[in-house]
Image: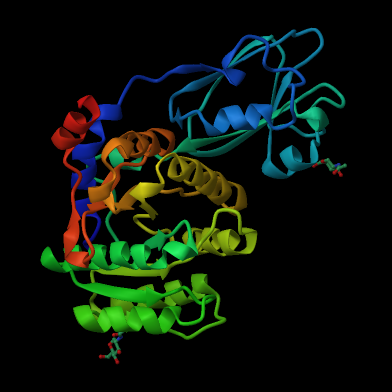
Length: 346
Ligand SMILES: *[C@@H]1O[C@H](CO)[C@@H](O)[C@H](O)[C@H]1NC(C)=O
Ligand SMILES: *[C@@H]1O[C@H](CO)[C@@H](O)[C@H](O)[C@H]1NC(C)=O
């Protein structure tokens, strides 16, 4: 199936501003932060604000006589279990290279310290769009950060479908919002308007299975791309996030698009990083797929909030692939880097 080529091209345009050399990142942002922190979530709040990429290294500075760093599994991280670490570091000036994307877990080797918050969980963003020949196959789950913004989200979702059709790519939609009543009917109405086939199995089905069947059907029917509708996801709703994480794990999509409203500015930055953390945390994969790209609606009305869009790209490592600039799904545009820079310097 030929599908995500277009997305990859766009990325090459929008991401060049942010490529840089591998960094050495001091844990906690200052010397001796690898110790019992002032508040239990101190280290992870720091990590949420920091962008980690493949090739970057974490630097842990601590007193090697009294402490150490244990790299552990997620379960051992959650239970502060020191008995079987993946690796142990004791030299007090420890450099750990982040050589793969996904989640990495660290706890203190000193009795009782992990329980008091000397623990760290970092998410390294996927690099896959850096290569120009990423594999192309099927679906694109499109999470939404907030069910109240459902209409905005639909605008974004349908906008992508419309854009693909404009580029002569055949699309099938999969109705995988099986929780919210009315969601399937709503998608059906939109699909009819664009004359796109829709795969649906009603409600109360496991969305991960519906998506899988949709992809099989699309393969049989010769559709190029499956757009998976997973609306109404909230990063604080654990069951829904878990279902989304499973859907991604089971279906290995080419592209996970985060659809958010440009208007919410810095809140969106926060939501996006929490969203990614949750996806990583809840995934059954040791190397979970996270958000690959961002679609911002209401981009025509943001003016001075354009900096938040840059921050979203910065914290997630994912490019803004589309911006919505109006009230119709024909209004989706590629981000114009020149005009962004102009707005910033105004
Ligand atoms: C800690 O992990 C070890 C090995 O994985 C396991 O045998 C042990 O039961 C765990 N301890 C606790 C308290 O969970
Ligand atoms: C796939 O093709 C079959 C046979 O033509 C058709 O019955 C079915 O509705 C198609 N699936 C979708 C989702 O359009």
